[in-house]
Length: 338
Image 1 (cartoon, one colour):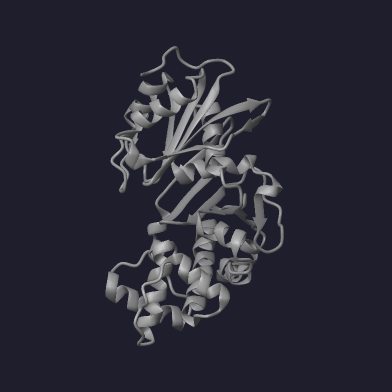
Image 2 (cartoon, helix red, strand yellow):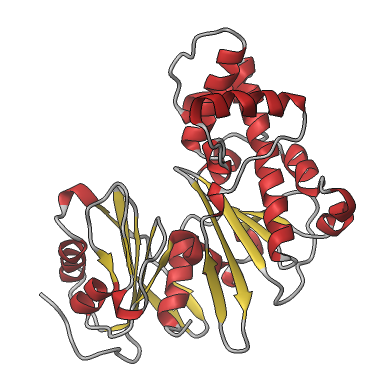
């Protein structure tokens, strides 16, 4: 079933955050300049043959409300432009495309973007309560470029720049830049990882699987057998200090994340601030206070030689708002022209 008639004045904003396992759908509403986002409905992608089927089920259950805009995001780069834009997902067979979104919703120009581009669009609407400062709370330079990165299943990277009339999210694949060592211990670990994997990207260690990779590398270098832990196991063992390799893996993770974030800030000139999303660091802040070593992160973030003082003035925040990507999507659906 489809709807038609184009955008409805005062209608809802349909937002969809599509992952390999779960898809989150919500109908956001405008309240003056603010956007209200209810808790999303979560659909298992395996339970629905296609994005169209899941969207139809969601809209049917919601009573087919009039829509003023539509925006969706998924993990992965957007291929094609305009009506031909689509995202090919690694772990989900759905056709995530502008054509599908338009056909099912009746909105002629839905927005489709990478999930971290959606997160970047949320940044101007985040309040102090949504953010945890890493180090001192510094002031961002208004309308300067913003950098966003976050570790979860992979390492997502994006940016936000400001045009005359619109904020422009810039999606990228910065998680696949080369990982660089900063000391002999990191060089030893990197050499081991190169012997196993060949090219070693930042994502190879700065992700959930990357934390497992780091722990396994440390065990191998010590001549111990890897016990087959999950990322959550490693974090828990580091938090309770029962596993020295888990503690070192987390410390290396924090340092390398700081180094990559500093590189990103230099590349973008991100005087508008650096924002950390993803599942890992916000999760550690919420459930394991102190596991995210902010001092190690900040030291490596600023350790860029002659530009250390320049980086010291850039604020870094962890995004604590769970629905921040949906907020960014709602802002995109409200203002459909990028």
